[in-house]
Length: 260
Image (cartoon, rainbow, N blue to C red):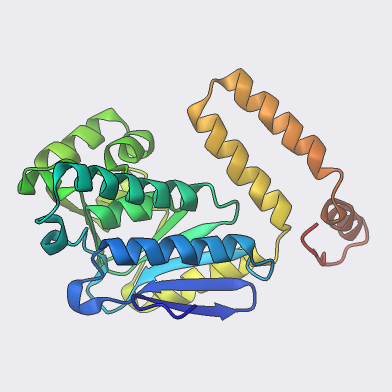
């Protein structure tokens, strides 16, 4: 499919999805969200994809937020549907079963911060800025910002950022557990691709098991999480990749994982 608002590229087993509306600072409108749904569905179903990098075009923004010009004309019912459409995308990314790295090269505000938080890892340029500025528009976050911010950073920071609408720099975002790693802007692409390439060489089912166990454990009690981990650990023993990984370790060679 030809996308109007996205650019899709792939190197080896790493697929990069780039939001390509730099003149709008890659703002999320309904059309872009729909295309992202399709792009992530394709990545989930394509066995040649082990890892996804998500980023924004241009030097200024990852995603500067939702498209305010479009939002301004929404009725309450349309706004509810817009929120649900966005939330479903964030949940789809979070539950993809393949690692998704947000490469944040600039502003990640509003819907952009919500999009980054839905990814499993967030690599940011030192110059990146984060925030949930919806209150400045008389709104609240609508794509999961209150909930993922609460889970990642805790109640106090979630209240501070959502109530104040103020932006924070990458260093503070890292201190609040909102950013995984920080790099100089000139090194961000190289370092993100290097890490993605490392993940892409690992056993896909093991990566999926880790993502699923941590996602479930973050929402459930410890006993439930431990039981799920045990089940995932046992299931891994049925895979060819587990046999290859353990054999390669014993034989002192690099494993060649095949994905099943």
